[in-house]
Length: 266
Image (cartoon, rainbow, N blue to C red; front, side, top):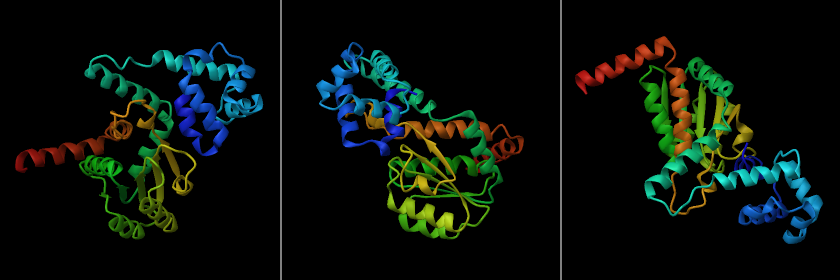
């Protein structure tokens, strides 16, 4: 897992000292490889033990492994002075590769089985996350799976309150801090419905309510304030799950049937 993904995954464990270390490392990627842990500690004005603890928190085996990971990431960074087409293409590639480090084949297969077994599925999210929720609902409705999506806070709470034991709630929240999404997950949990949380951060109030946590990469680790796309990782996940769902013969037949109806009468 690359340096940025480790920071994202273990963000809730990091202290003020850790963020001080991260800021220095990000600003001095090209020189870190030549420094000892003592040199680095003196320049950051923390103790060598603080750097060692930081490496352990973000799951590096050693200080050396952390340095090489940082240098490798630095060598892969793209030149922002190029054509805009190339810049955006490279950003997409970076985000997709980063998200790929979080999502496993086993996890996507497990989620697909949960979706196929559910009586009803409710997708929820607010803002850009809501767009992903609506898109996923649109896709699986065409496969004949009973589902709804909602981006309205009150609608989200009402629908979640009516979920039952064999239903499934799939929440999209990049921050993991959206109150109505947290409350909806809590209602679903109280009703013994399954809960899948798609988010950027692992240890949040929202993920504490999850039966399954799906981490996706955050666009915030692209160091360019002009790039604001938050949806690429979510759409990548949707494509993975859709592809697996349509490997099921019955779901594929249903999709073809609904598409035929739309083509004839839509």
